Image 1 (tube, one colour):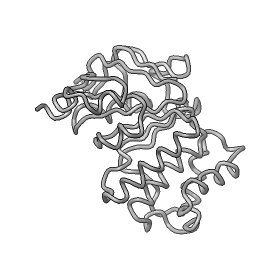
Image 2 (cartoon, rainbow, N blue to C red; image 1 turned 90 degrees about the horizontal axis):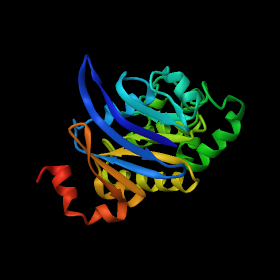
Image 3 (tube, one colour; image 1 turned 60 degrees about the vertical axis):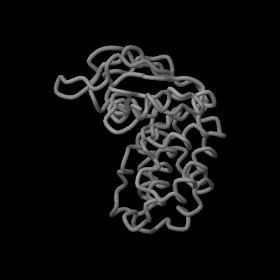
Length: 233
């Protein structure tokens, strides 16, 4: 579904990603782990067309997408739920969700709304409420629901647990697990190692813009190299 080879990308000529390789198969949940500043968000933006690629290749569903406009990447079914939710606070929950199908899947808007409401019943209860008045957990549900409205083939979730209470973090990972059961490919970009490895089939640990460690999630849970790669200890 997603193949990245020797990717170099950054800002103003300063590379953040330094020859990064990874892949996500169809229907697979892959965790991208690492502490702040290792290149996780830059990776997401490079895949989504928001940061220019200096060299290397990004292929999605068999086609090269590096250099495409972000809206064209969305139209192909690669949808990125950004860090910090980025909802429209003065618009209603329904209006935010409907915007998720603006570039893709507009003919299936009603059917997809029903699916989102089945996954996130609280959003249905708050359909006409201003999005900015939702709790942090509800706003994250809205951000993910908006992404699902576009019928993604691959959904990138950037730090979905950021800023949530421990109880809401547990709930959020449970919802991500439910979404994954539908067969949707998910790239879960997180700092929360333990719960990410519970949800994912495989994981990559980033350090200084490269892959420091990767493998099956079950194997990495007990791998002593994980602490070294992640914490530098």
